[in-house]
Length: 141
Image (tube, rainbow, N blue to C red; front, side, top):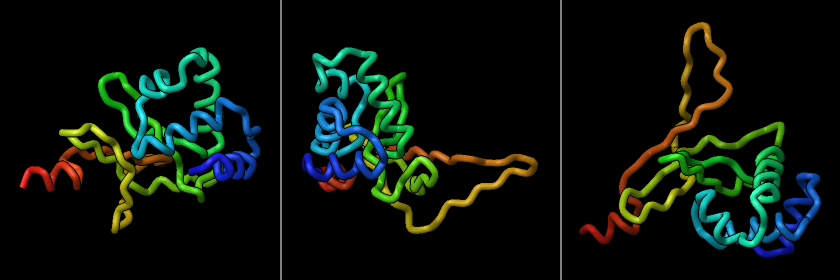
């Protein structure tokens, strides 16, 4: 995603195209997979923690990024699909973590996953899957 595309995405979500937001989304886009909070902090240095926290929260709130995975007190964030918004989240996918290279990817599923619990209203389902990614799996054989 280039700077123009990032600006358009932010404008579509009614967010100001601040330097911090553009920089964060550019780094996430270039990273190639979900990015851990600690990696974001490191790559965004010298941005202070409060500014970074507020930036991440604003982008999550407006459906620009989402929490893709949580493992060992580390949260990973990924850029949302273009159709996501505050009102309509399009996260019918699984979060796959490779146990070798430790990358995390959002992967679409062929079949819709439907879960129901008697007497409960489910608002969100999050599925985390671990195994070997395509690249690491090919290297094994």
